Length: 128
Image (cartoon, rainbow, N blue to C red; front, top):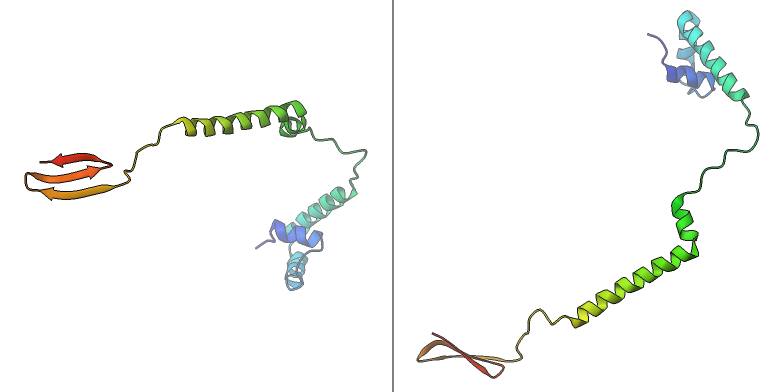
């Protein structure tokens, strides 16, 4: 069994757990293939560690949403649309008649010649 890439990378970066170290070192002493892979990892880590960033980082482009929010004209237009929308909702709800009218008083009493006799807001209703 050979060491996996995680173990070799951790060893190269000195991040291997102390309890794993003796077993890994013993395996490396007897396995030329794993020693070769470890040498490759060591070379890669050394190369990456030697890289230096020169100059300023490349600026990221501005997001369009930020530009829209920063524009005073577009901000005023958005506020106007919201105000008109809320105003039209409130006006349309006040102009509409109520969905149904609930009578103030209902009096129900049976009569001999009808099944049901009711008086709703002064209007007499008979059901036969």
